[in-house]
Length: 257
Image (cartoon, one colour):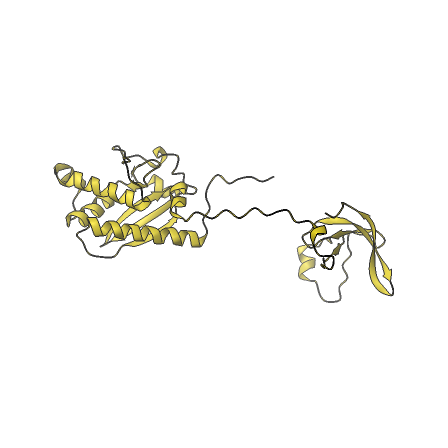
């Protein structure tokens, strides 16, 4: 039975591609919003339970990535956008700094996922358990952005990460191929399989050239006649044909089509 996994698995090349896109987009945001110098460093890894449990997050729902809402995040935006690292209390007391940094945070979130429109972050920060179901631990990615000694943590849901990857072209539908459609001179390999032998690990370790293995199969019994991919075509018996070892087809399991 085929069961679909409830989360997204990433190949190493996919993680590298998402990381590269995030680096480019964060660098583009820096050119517009930062007054500090320095190149952005981006590190991407699968999200762990500690990433969710240890921080408060600003949730942007389906449109925006979740962003950490802590002292590091305050320092990241204030140092880059205002040129000085300020505490949360100092930012909240300022009539100018708070709105500027809120706008910078929203601009970065939109830039990372290339979205626009009316989307915005929730005013009330959330714990990991309160985040949108999009940010499940399994399948979410944790993005660490470092610039000028400042670090910001960002969460990407599996759907958001997939939106960064290029869409895969659907393969063209192929007509089913039947053996009878192949040229008559086409060669097809056949295999004759006997019942397996069972060995203990100790016996396997002591196996040497010249040892005889007894199979769970009688010499005059029937053996499976198979294609190399394992599909059984029928049954056959061992014997001799013109002085050479041969098999005689006893019965077919299914017609060849």
